[in-house]
Length: 252
Length: 320
Image 1 (cartoon, each protein chain N blue to C red):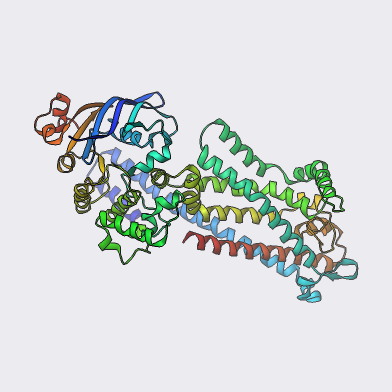
Image 2: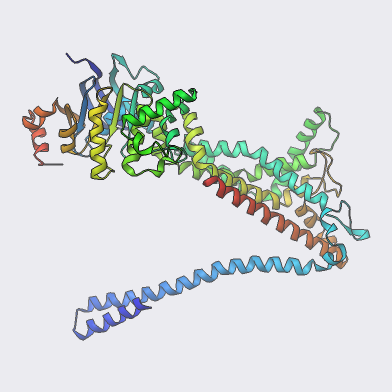
């Protein structure tokens, strides 16, 4: 029924000699919210950064195996095209401090040297900000600097910036860990809307968040993908004892 | 002081009620530390304040010593085009032009190199033995005594410049404004390069990652993230270089040609204010001449201060 959009085949990644992600095989369905959880240092963020080839930007970082996006290996694609199709939102809100809210949203087009007519730019900005439920809050202050916004608003601005490029997949690297509870719940509400148009892969160390927002959950432990299942099944009936230990809080 | 007393009473109290010796010892030590803190604070205040006093002292000395020349020449000192110590005619305009021309020309020549070094070391290869070697070498450029640059300039560079100038149809001996600018350009690279490098290295990784995640290439990241973020720092480095270029004496004196005439082109010989002072100080045989040279120093001092102040303004404007 559901089609696969991202598929990892025997994917491994390394920092120098340090084997961080070990033989991961996973099929991620389209238009779903996938949570990736696990204790600190389990390789979940490294795996996420491998999907859009951000991993290799770190000196000494290497990867083996395949990540297929709609059947094409991203390792064979130019990283720039990979990143245009797979957007990313980071742990800390990182709007460009020298750009206005408006320019932050279309920063992707500017960076890539794509010039659009004003009307088209306006449309993209309004559309993207509406998608992240920020339009109403900032439509009168679009010329203000992006850093003028609160932390939660900045994070939604960063999501809008990723959404503006119309990617197929959106990666979230612990997107709410730097936010207060109210901003967190606003971002979480967004996931339900965003997954209608995009596939969301959300790394989180917060189990409750995984349970709240995701359709399927992947559990990573010591660099291995231990279990990948529907979120409900995972939290009610974990198959692996390591998963069971994790969700019952026996280690964190 | 309050802290001090508190610590003292604490010690007395702990003695009275007979708390262990160890505790007492610790209190006594902290009193000493607090006293040392106060002494240290005073010391650094006096050292810092001494700097200000020294600069003001230099300014006052320059003004006082040049009063003779100020009285006899007046304001025409600044725009007089003739410098003839024998007839007591002192106009520094040619040297003012020479100084500004060599410095800015040197700046223009050095900027591409220093920015390239700053980006290479700050962004592309911050770690490893090759970058470290390059960094140390560039910093060594600043450590070489300027008289050595002068020698090298005369022996190696001037003949090359002469050939180049002959090839483009200029009749010169090779020494002049252009040769000095080239030497200066080399000498000032390290200042803007090392400040630029540390600025580029300070660009937050998460901003660069944001740009990469939007599909930017490395060049696009440099253009849209690194340069806007570091422009005030890069400019501050350029100002540092300029300050160095304005005051550089020895190497310039050796290759500029030392003529009191207003330079007709960038290939003509000329002179800078610093070079004139260095060249003629020992020859100043009457009081007005000596005073005129000191006034020249005063003008150089003021030009440097003004250019620095403008630079500070611009750096502030950039960082907004």
